[in-house]
Length: 244
Image (cartoon, rainbow, N blue to C red; front, side, top):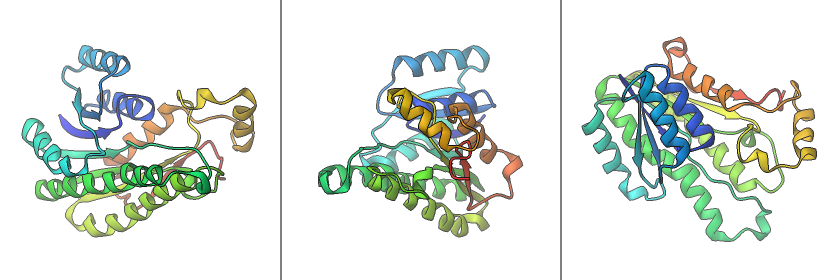
């Protein structure tokens, strides 16, 4: 089985991506702080059709100093890493003028520094093993303004810049680096929106609907596949036409 690490895989987008890849003949190492009932159910479901295709690994990606040991242990326990999906992230709403500096630092640490450092150690392993695929989860917030999400938008814009430059660095060693930029996705987070807010977002999109988790997971699967072997340094936007 080809090993793919998916971070932030216990719920929402990350869990949807992990499920999709486990069903596509990958062995998914689902990294999250804690296992929950959703992830447990997904592991049991995956084991019925492909035993061992979805594994949980408890790790707090905020503990950046421990990331080298994480990558080392994954290689030791599972073998070569063929893919990395940097999905884990956090978001705090609020205007910049009122946001505590500790929250700003936490956003940048978890959304930008942590995936960059994780990628550093994974890409070393990929180059040693002859290649691999990295998919970074960006956001349409990297391209379009949204009130109350300035710091979050900054972290995602950084990920886009990181993706493009790293693609040039490691391409000759057989590593493809791409990003996926979802729009508003129909998850537990957006279920907290009022009907009026949801309708406003839907009206703003060309297709008049929210993106489904499956849509984003399909884009990630594509970028990890042979079909995308000549794609690197690019950003796939999956937003139902919100930025069209």
